[in-house]
Image: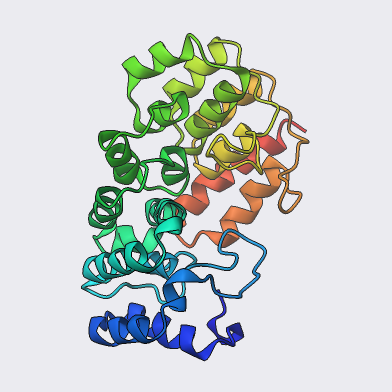
Length: 286
């Protein structure tokens, strides 16, 4: 997010107070200008952070600072109290979306406050949700905690958490869309056993997860297996009929293209070697 494109000086001041953990200034600003809580910022970004509420800045998602103030939990509690006071009709919308941003964010996890932030939001009435989204962004502990706090367990989440008994139970009644999302999750984490299990159930690998499944919708299971550096998962998918010519919906790259690109994107030498091995395997199939 480009803060320089925000023209609302008052909102910028409030954001700076959130980022700096300056509770006295933040409280004074809200007291004098309740619109900071009741209104959304006029920032039509066209993405998931379109016209955000002030509360939604607590997660640094999208990333702006690469860090959160040490007292971000207290800052969040203050904002929640002010929302309940000034904007009770939007409490559910504000808190639920903030929870999603925290659960899928990298910065809350790295700062060691992800679970605390999730708890303060859920305790304040946010509905636990978004387990698959958390897993799609590498937040395994967050996903498990959402289940602990009452979120529904889906096949996709069970696969991501490697809860085998639940996978077997849920797979027996899963829809095609749920099966595909679960297979994509298994490929994303390079869970070879899970990939094999789902393929043996007859899951078709040649599609993209549907919107609403909570997982990345722009790429096939084979793309995700390439990204996970799991050559065994890649081979299982290819042997099950995964097409090599399907392209991702964001950049138009094939699985082979992903293997080549990741060698330049990932700076870890061991990872580069693993991507190179996958590239060689896929190139040999053409």
